[in-house]
Length: 401
Image 1 (cartoon, rainbow, N blue to C red):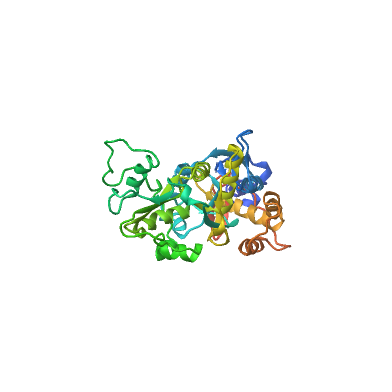
Image 2 (spheres, helix red, strand yellow):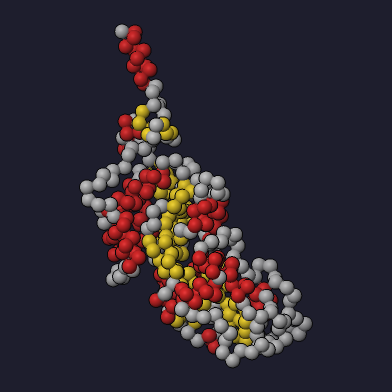
């Protein structure tokens, strides 16, 4: 009898595979800190009246988190917080529910020897089109593009141009002179993260020509004596904006300067564009169009935009960013939940609801088919480990007790 008792005690303290410890519904449901944007409509945004989060990605995130066995605790993320999280993991979000482009540079940063090794990408959930809109009549936008005065210095910096633009259309003070050098805080993104994709390798000129079907050339009638400028805007932290910042400075000609401006949100970018302070507005076309529509509705005024570039653009694979810092098994569980949602048609239905009448691109149609698990495949999630699991002989175990 004593031998049997000793054997039972010994077995009780042996590690058990996770499926044999407890069922998922017997474990306490944890709350995940989910970082969310408030201005990335139609993917995710916050209703100013109800303060509720809405959008295609919001519905995907909340459903996937619930299927994975967690509750959502949303926390608003602006462009600066987002950039810090993607670069260093600062902010400690369990999930970034945001249209985040997968790039090799970010994947390298999420590797074990990167600056944010606890982060990883979910499966690709959407394929977007990165491009730009431009003003229909740039002649009526002196603060977005045009000629600089004759007294402007040769090869003026963007900082000098932006300070001069404060007086464009008005008479500067009598003692005002062109500032020397580049003024701090007047140009450039605050984020140090730079996309290392094809655009950086081949240069912005060739990349824009190939992607957007236009040529960066000296404006017609522009001579060596005539100095001109254009102001291009983007939202801080976007991959297309980082590419502009990395390349455009050395592509500007001495008498034709392009100044990229980082805006804190799409709401601000749309306002600047509609106020004719941006000649071009770069980013995800779906988000840009939604931001311009919202601006028109909110202000009751028009905003003429040329969408001729909408037929071409960059390939932007969007995914969520997951962290294993607090819950080591969370990324795996959410990934399985996402594949389950593709397989049972949930994401297809959500797409139809948020993009009524929209025809999926060839890339997006292919993605939906690839991510759909064939019928008969077991997609049931394994029970959660109550504490961090460990591995032995290629099997994942939960510590006893």
